[in-house]
Length: 82
Image 1 (cartoon, rainbow, N blue to C red):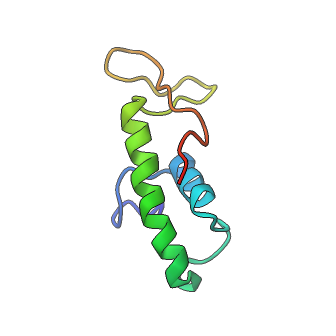
Image 2: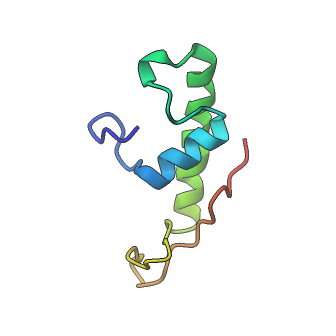
């Protein structure tokens, strides 16, 4: 998921959230994922990215991410539910 040529916009934070929601061990190589795991990952991607959009992104404690009006993103960790 971190390969931006495959899917743009999924960094470490969102990838971890997606795999958590999908119930997939992040140490699993993608070529070893089962069909049911892939089928859980897709809706998790959609939920996490939609939550990120709705909450204007994610700002960690370092405060480096700011949205257009210069506010922190408000996406809480593990905000989505499958």
